[in-house]
Length: 354
Image (tube, rainbow, N blue to C red; front, side, top):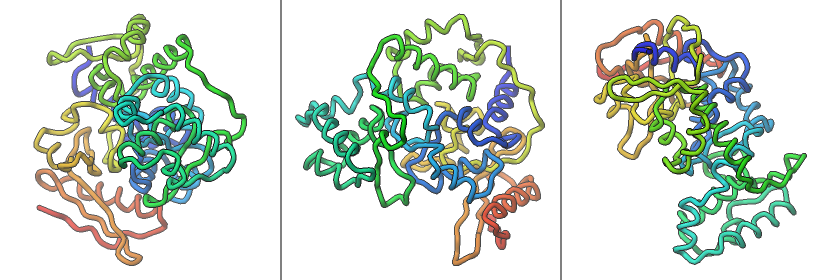
């Protein structure tokens, strides 16, 4: 049985927090998805786990290696293009809150999606206004839910853009287009694949962790978990039951100071973030509206928060420690490493509360 220290070390290593990934595709395969409501924080999240410059990271996003679609928790995420069918089979083939919202509002979801699909096949770039015209005069929640459903069903993806411009493109424009249809055997295998990959990337974890990360409920994952029983090891620690893939014990590397991005998957992939921080620290790291701050990790635990901003052409960092200042020189080196990826020297680091 693993102890909590070993669980923490394994989790941090898997996501490249002790050793950055040389291959960005390998990192995305491991992470599965990056939360991406805002474009720049998602890029920072990605950049901090891979050995790339900012320009290289932007190119990786824009050159159709990855796609932005809605999936986990009906939230915008970045996936590898090759995982879109997986998203369809796990999230797009089941009745969810979008269907219930549309039923309540009297929206014929199937008819609306068919019209959106037809428009996307005719023109490569579709604006949000054009999609809103098809959907009709409904609230922002209804409109956004239907667009999210279109992504989960394999129709539209969001193009890399600023956070205020919303342009979409149909999957047909990626080439090699294939129609997907719900099929019980394939859909079940997709769910099993998602669970395997979650445990490969984030295990050991609890089923509550997986449901928190994915947004799926007990009934939706039950058949897959039962079929996977022979592939899994389980153990109990502090009255919690953990699950991991059999023989999944990577070589532990020496820990280092690591700067996460906002909504870093290595932090938000678990229901209870106190595996890496105290409850008091969690309250500092999460805003009242649920935004996860960028966190400083050292010696396998969270020690503070960091952020950056541009003032004219100057890159300024703010560091706030949870308790007393620590690892200052190593934190400074990581901030300098971050600045170097922009081709920018670190001109100012401001410390708060020390």
